[in-house]
Length: 170
Image (cartoon, rainbow, N blue to C red; front, top):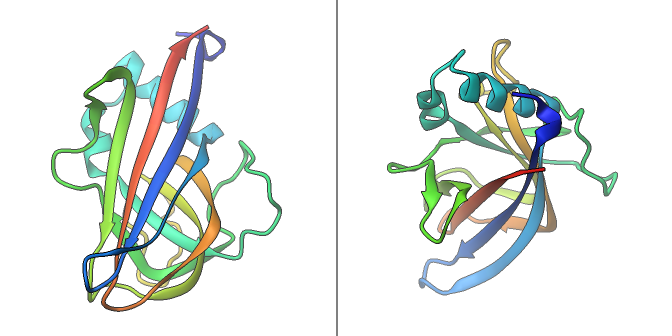
């Protein structure tokens, strides 16, 4: 399969839910499948690796993204946050019920887990980052997203991300 024949784009929706169950902040922003992600998808589609690799994906968060433009060559977060890796939620990834061209990932950073001010970047990766937030040597990045309105997650908050990757033929 030639990469030129497939258009890939995506978006991320997020919610920051306070301890009272009310939404404190929500938004939607663009994500980009990076060069490593293009190759990862081609490997899955060609049967070189199994699609089950997506079921063990992780979301990792960071701060420090300041250039204002997502680029295909991103290979890790600008400033990764220690202990901010979370596995893809049970039952994900899955196809969006209303559009089988859309692959959805869902990640949740629960109350009592991980706190940070200024979260402004996120990645989907193939392996959990080590405690310091460093990218594991053999990990692949599928997608990068700039969180356009920085999020401040307090200890009692829940931070939810629904990540969508859309595949369309040319």
